[in-house]
Length: 380
Ligand code: CMC
Image (tube, rainbow, N blue to C red; front, side, top):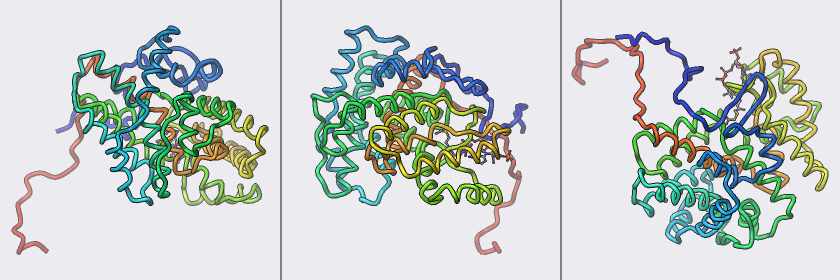
């Protein structure tokens, strides 16, 4: 039986929801959160303010923001049983797998489910925004046999994360740059992980399961995992002299170049423009990353080859260079994306609950019918 609808691989161009959370104009390179341009938020706002805006559809007043920040600060610690569980994870495991497991484990500890109660929603938002960074930083230290660093109450959200990674207080400019990175990654309309979050949310399961689904989806190299792959690629290319031959080889082997291309953007991703600026800011203060010149040359060569097809640098192209300069190991780049995107996932979770109908798409069956059952001993 056919459904009468045209099948679109990857659901390209098919609206799966109506949403007022964010907007992308892929031809003009415009991204807005709740109608506010990303460039303005990156310059003037902070990650937690942006999270509030995304989730509650309004810029918070001074007292609302202070309350939100203080509630998050008070929930940053994780239960020792979660830490003990994480200690048992293999140290060779990928931090995204550790994060997915730990996010799901929160559901064991906070099992009350009252999706129709605003206080339950608020508490879940606070808990997830507060604890996910702590879990990422804790796994990073524990996999090296070290105790996790407890959150530092004198530091704000971004500074505290950098502190928990190294037990050193970051410079203000480092915290500010990292906070801006979080803002840039906080939300991006309908994409694989957000869709995954919404499908899971639509079953009315708990928000920790929703986040765990989304983290698992973000981990793939075609989605959030690309930022880690970009650095590996730059290291593999090694020098600007090898860029052209690397691209030629990718073209010959029909291999995608990581950090380029986007389903929606047909120009340079506006987040990549801002991230490149942040990278340059850091390089000015701390010295240039040896792979920055390789990245610039690669961007030039890819644009010359693929620009007319609308393939340009995406958000993942420059973020790794920023994170590396901040001293973050490359396999944590995707978990950092997740720390930020929790805000967007939570906004979509809340929006989905307001209009919920369980996702139950259809399929076009391509198999056979009325086949005989062949007994085992007669099978060839
Ligand atoms: N390098 C070379 N060719 C590319 C690239 C690339 N990075 N991206 C797309 N193309 C080509 C692709 O080969 C295809 O060519 P043709 O029409 O000749 O077969 C055409 O462009 C369309 O590509 P597609 O894969 O059908 O496009 P899509 O919308 O399904 O995929 C994408 C979008 C982001 C998955 C893809 O561009 C890609 O795999 N990029 C590399 C991985 C990456 O950087 N991912 C991060 C995406 S942005 C952040 C996020 O979503 O997490």
